[in-house]
Image 1 (cartoon, one colour):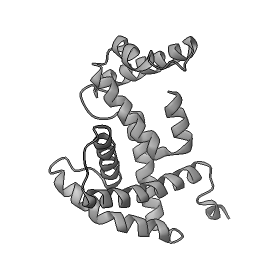
Image 2 (cartoon, rainbow, N blue to C red; image 1 turned 90 degrees about the vertical axis):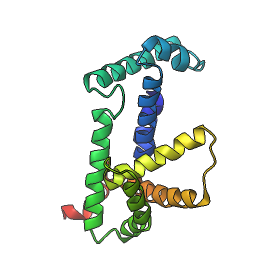
Image 3 (cartoon, rainbow, N blue to C red; image 1 turned 45 degrees about the horizontal axis):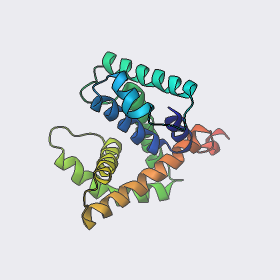
Length: 185
């Protein structure tokens, strides 16, 4: 909750990846708040009792949402899908706007890797932005498992990461009404 709030304000891409990880942590603990309290909340000695209570309530609300939205086994919460939808809409607007050539350049540098990943997805193809996030999340999981990654894969991840970092930067500018401010003249 505290980390999510901080990431949401600072870097929307990190926030979304963090929230996907939280969904997986909840699943790994069988959507059981007692297990989450034991494995995730209680070990955080820097939190006082009130903070632990708030964190428990946050996890309980996420568990409830996961059950109601039927994503207990897989998939993402609507609140996370909404962030992705916002990113897709911004992505589309940035590509159409000639004032953002650097963004278009970064996208086209990442595009061959996105296309390759989408091709490997078979029937479960996602949009370009979600494919990028799936790749970044997959890399995060590989790093957590301390798995080796080929130079070719690292190159692809670096291109995708650079592209998503710029999208994230523009997202925060857009939220602050500083991205398309020329449009208001």
